[in-house]
Image (cartoon, rainbow, N blue to C red):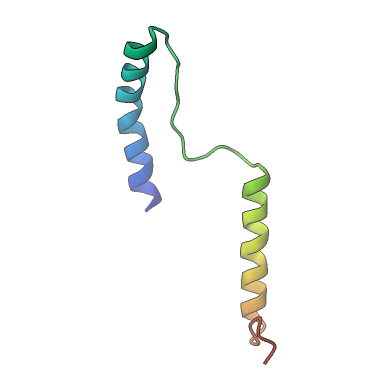
Length: 65
């Protein structure tokens, strides 16, 4: 799903810039991207994924049964 979204982001970037320039008479230099670098939400997502894999990998799941 990420690859089609990346292609879509690059396709719509030009029309978005053109619309903003038309409405505001300024050049915004907008850049649509899926990757914004390592930040707090990204790190927290990795922590949750690791905890989920570890929790499910123990064989007990999180139910403790």
